[in-house]
Length: 106
Image 1 (cartoon, rainbow, N blue to C red):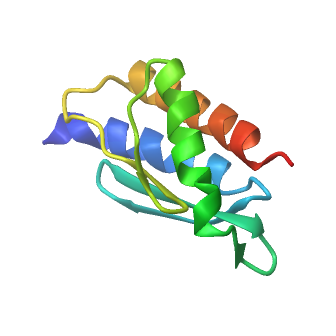
Image 2: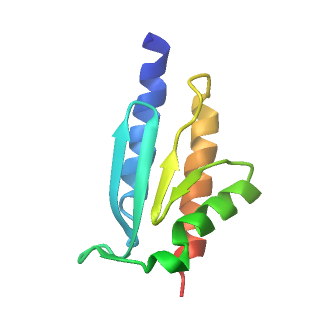
């Protein structure tokens, strides 16, 4: 269990950085599970229309980068295996950031 602490801390750092994106309304974490809520405007937390499938677009971009994520409407879920490495978490973080940039540009 002690070998999970660095991974959990790295995910927390990645989510904190991702949470600063202007189209991220909230990030949540429980252990190695993270969730990122996409919004039109961070200040007002106005959601994207669910029919625009912004979460799916982020996941599609990540998939092309070799990262598998789960979309739940406008929420992107990160749920890696416990055996993941810190370097692989960094790859996930990068793919998510690039995916959000791609999926939220109008």
